[in-house]
Every structure is written in structure tokens, then in C-alpha cells.
Amino acid sequence: MEAHEHLKRHYLEAVAHWRMREEKAMEEKLSEQREDEAVFHRIALNVLDIFEKMFLVSYGAVYLDRPNPKLQPILDQHQDQKDQLRAACQLYFDTLPEPWKAKAEQDEEHGHTEEWKKELVKIEVVRILETIFHGMFQEMMEGDDHDGHRH
Image 1 (spheres, rainbow, N blue to C red):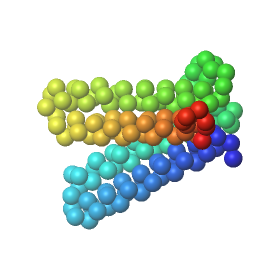
Image 2 (image 1 turned 180 degrees about the vertical axis):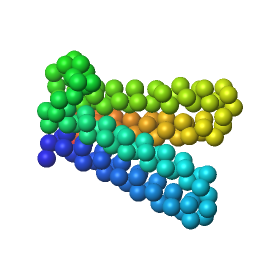
Image 3 (image 1 turned 30 degrees about the vertical axis):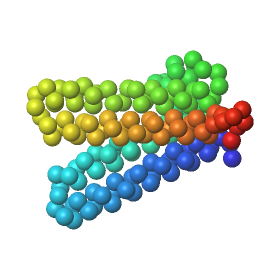
Image 4 (image 1 turned 90 degrees about the vertical axis):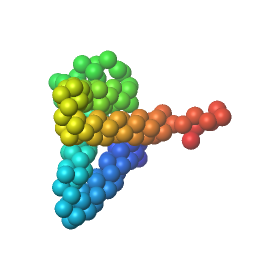
């Protein structure tokens, strides 16, 4: 299996594992009639779905030759497919949360605490997914370099 296939498998497994934890937590809150808390797990699930699709779209554009006009300018900037994948995913990590960040600032300014918290959940899930992606990318696509040898 090639490195990019390992990355795909592991990233999607990480998202699936996180999704299962969020679903379980949401079900527990709902069974305890704590709908106000369950909504935060639902939001996290929605973001996980978005960023699972983001990865699949990016991967498809790079490794499966699926045309994507939004990503093409980014892909054209890089020769190596692994760099194309990293850049395509980073575009989504950077752009998708922008409206959430703007809304969070607005909600905070207007004292809409509940709405502000919802936006923060979205932003935090993206931040963690981005960290997971880059950690896996480093390990699987570039290898960890320790004491002059690769793992």
C-alpha cells in the first residue's frame, strides 16, 4: 500500500473513531434529557462529516484525477502529489472555518453566549482535525526523521 493510501485509511479511521465517540456521547445526553448539551455533539458530528468529505474531495482531485475547479489553482502550484494533497486540504482547513470564526466574534460581541459556544465547537473540531491530518501526513507521507534514519 502506498503512503497516500495509508494516510487516507488512517485519517478516515481517526474521523470514524471520533464520530463514534461523539455519537455515543450525544446518545447519552439525549437519554438523560440533556438536549442542550447533546447539540454540541451534533455540531461536532456535522464538522467531522464536512472534513471527511473535504479529505475525500482533495484526495480524489490529486490521486484519482477527479476534476475540481476550486482546487485546480492550488494543485497547479505544486509538482509533487503529496504537496498537492497537503495544499488542497490546507485550503479547506483555512477557508471553511472563516465564517464560523466571524460569527463567533459577532456572537461574542453581542453577548449571544450559546451561539458563540456552538461556533467555538466547530472551530475547535477543525483545529484538532488539522493537527491530526498534519501529524499523520508528517508520519506517513514524509516519514519521521530521528537520529538520521527514517521510520
